[in-house]
Image 1 (cartoon, rainbow over the protein chains, first blue to last red):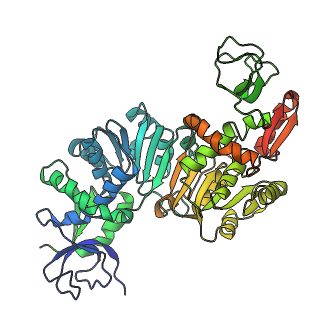
Image 2 (image 1 turned 60 degrees about the vertical axis):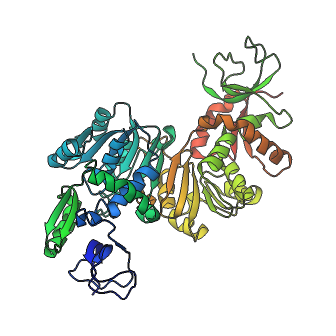
Image 3 (image 1 turned 90 degrees about the horizontal axis):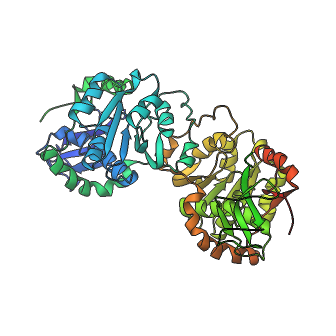
Length: 269
Length: 269
């Protein structure tokens, strides 16, 4: 049986590939298992071991690069712009918000619990945040947070939230479509009704995949490592202990049970 | 009572504005009436009078500039790309298709009658065309015309057509959103369900308004006038005679009764 793949951090026990030797720490596509035989590696050496190794599943791995590429490359952000992020306390969203704050933007996030909203406002430095599950009218929530409209929407959820955002975009706004997690487990995706706003507001909406931006990883590290070491950016993880907790942790993502990046600790150093 | 405004061509009878003198031919925002008092002019002098004057409501006016800006500025087209245009025989669509053919693209249009499909294939040089009203499955029609997918979609209609296009876009495709005429007269716009394809295919979808591109008009004329005079581009108009025919002509647009750009001839030279 094929193991389930996922982004992980591991230590090389043996390798016939000259690029990897015993004892190397690596990150990339590993299996949901304690020991993996990796034959077609999407695998990188851990470049800095003086940070928590779990960061290579998050801020220093695929989610970090996703936030970096999505925000800086797709959103074309400018200082002072109004930025909205859905699923804002998640693996990617929490970083986009902090990048936007560092650039001098006004930043609002939505999330699905009081704890997440507290996290956004009190630990991650968002200007505003709201619990979408407690807002009877998403449009009203956005008008309250963005009386003059939204320049940039970092889209992680899709569906009703996107529809509400569309009627609150400013002229020349940009929507980076990173994910639409609210739609993935539906039999049929919800309809989005307000796309005519793309015309009147001249909005650009663009989907992206992080794999198109792998070449930027060194540039990303150059920026992010000093931010981490200087405490300018924090990263919140929700760690489930033991491989046996992985299935429940995965399922929990779809109901938003995790607070921050969901990590499964298979083993410790 | 305020007259209804619309894009028209007119002759100046008198003017207190030094930029216009008696006898000048002008185009721009005029009234649905035989004589207009224009106080806040969105009005330009006719730069070339050796073409049909009605062209300044179409190929040399707002629709022409819309096709030009939408195709060259928003779609980022390249030779050899696969281009799909909805409402392809309309005021804008017929030009986008001809621009794309001149660039060496493969071009397909959809329209709502056999006459329109004939026009696209036999007079306007489209590679393929289909009548969307006779296609039980729009997705199947697009797969038939674009076995390898669509690079560029010039969007004029919205709704179900957009949904079908989304599942046929190629990686890196672009959608220029010019209009969504199928949606304007609905109580609630239809839902669009396939937006997650923007992510997997890294598609850029961008709305635009021609008024943002007015500064390109001289450059546009430089390109289009030789094409018209050299017969490289044709422009199909559907002329209703007399101001009294204007209301029916307008209503007819929403059921697609017109063949080509709908013009109302209020008077002749």
